Amino acid sequence: MREITLSHINNVLADLEYPVTNEQAAADLEDVTLLLADGQRNLSTLIEQSESDRFESTDDLVTELHNVLPREAVGEPYQSEGEG
Image (cartoon, rainbow, N blue to C red; front, side):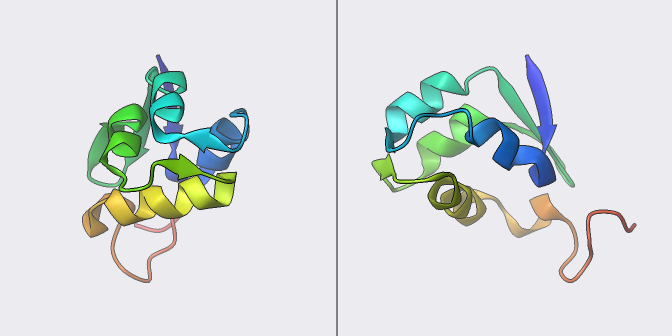
């Protein structure tokens, strides 16, 4: 099981071969736990919650992940990751 923070997610997502389907990305990342301000989430489960069937790039997948994460998962608004 790998654990990563949201600020390092690009490193993990860059290992995928793009374009990638939602199902393939979820399968490839099922062993990754995303550590968030309000706890942790399985990265595969978050990807499965996306309404996109396919991701064209790392940035595309990151954007979709931000859409499915609850606001409190990334900390207080206007707070950088190093504060608090």
